[in-house]
Structure formats: structure tokens, C-alpha cells
Amino acid sequence: MNSTSFLILAYVVAIGLLWGFALLTWLRWRHLNH
Amino acid sequence: MQPSNIQTSRSIKTRVYWGVTIALFAAVMAMLIVYTPVEKQMGPVQKIFYLHLPVAINTFVAALVVFIASVGYLWQRQLWWDDLAAAAGKVAVLFCAVVLLTGMIWGRSAWGMWWTWSPRLTFSLVLFLLYVVYLLIRPSIDSPQRRAVVCAVYGIVAFLDVPLVYLSVKLMPDIHPSSITLEPAMKHTLLAWFAPITLLMAGLINANYRLNRRLGAVQEAQPPAAAPQRAIPSQPILAARAGGLS
Image 1 (cartoon, each protein chain N blue to C red):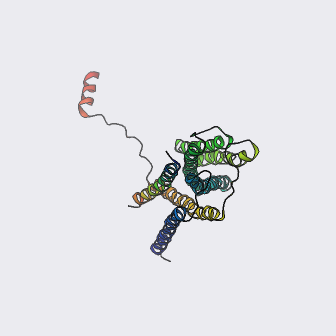
Image 2: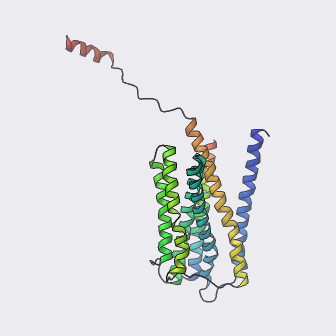
Image 3: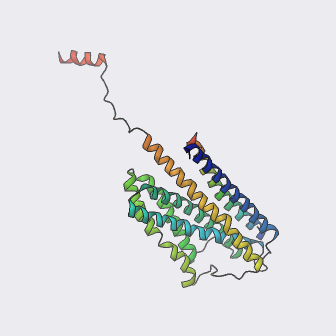
């Protein structure tokens, strides 16, 4: 893997975790309100 | 103002908040690709830094919120402090996981290894594990008051690791860089990244806090579990018993 591949991997992992958690929180909130 | 109007106003504010956060996130991603120069020594992988540092600082902020909410609960004994601490604890774990993973990927490229037991990395892992344990002990205590007291004491003690993570690189020899010289364009990018990451952290704590409050209200509204009813013996059994006794 080259430098660019590591960079893309890091951003995919980070954005996936951060926004995945945000989406999960929103889904739980929606489930609780319906 | 009517309750339905308050709810609509809050819903609009929430949508605007998350809209701004997503827009800023997209903007700083574009800035990273188009505007930010590539560092000469390390190459493109150095750009992990613009995400890594703001997420690390916001991990400390989330841990600080756990600490303040824990002190608040022990002071006032109101359960909303505990709900806030629980929400911030979750966000601290998430952000610390992102810090560790992005750091590991950077380390693999820069140092040729995924992990090394340097002081800062070790204290960061300890911080992650401390808050994972914080989240694990919560559901194991049934009484909300007892859970709040235990978690508040734990939340205060766990925060002691935050200054250790920060100071470890300054006080002990460490492979982790303690300061980096940046060109003006790199500084602008770093400062810009703090905006969406901080908004995301605050938004996630707020959303999880409201979720915890709502779950608490739903649990309080539920009737207490009915006592198990004693089984009524059926007629043939009674008849058999009567027959046996006669």
C-alpha cells in the first residue's frame, strides 16, 4: 500500500465510524418516536 | 408558546444544525483535496493529521463533559446529569477509537508498524479502555440512583488519564511527534477541520442526551412489573389429591 492508499483508508474508517454512529443515533431516535 | 410549536421549532433548529455540520464537513474535505499542499517528507499520508488532531482534542472535551456531569450529579443528585455523562461517555469512546485507528494507519505508513507501546499511544489506549468499561458497567446496575453514583465516581477517576495523555509526549521520550511546523495553508486547513468535528461532537452528545432522557421517561411511564401469579391447580389435580387423601 502506498501513502495515498493509507490516507484514503484512514478517512474511510474515520468518516464511516463518526457518521455511522450519527446515523445509528438518528435511527434510534426515530424508532423511539414512532 | 404551544408545546407542538416548541417541538417544531426544536426540530427546525436540529435540522439546521446538522445541515450546517454536514456542509462544513463536505467543505473541509474539498479543502483537503484542492487547497491543502502535500507535505514533502511524508507525502499524502500526512493529511491524516488534519482529522486526527481535532478528533483527539474533542475526545478530551467529551471526557471533560463526563467529568463535569459526574461532579454535577454528586453535587445536585439530579438524574439528568447522569444522562449527560452517559451520552458524553459514548462519544468519548467513539472519538478515541477514531484517534487510535487513524493514528495506527498513519504509524503503519510513517513508522512501518501499526502499533508501538510509546507513552502517548499507551495512555490513549488506556483512555479508550477506561471509557469502554464506563459504558459496560452502566447496564450492570439496576437502580438508577446507585448507577449514577457509581458511574459519577468512576467518571471523575477516569478523567485523570486525560492529562496523562496530553503530558506524556512532553515529559517522556516518545516516538509520537510533540509539535509539527506547518505552512500557512496547512494551518488554515487544520483550523477549518476543528469546526465540523467540534459541531459533530457537540451534536452527538446532545442527541444521545435527549435519547437517554426520552428512554428514561419511557421507562418511568411503564407500569411496574406485575408480581408473578401463583398457579391455580386445575380441577383434575385437586380431584386426584382429594382421592389420594381419602
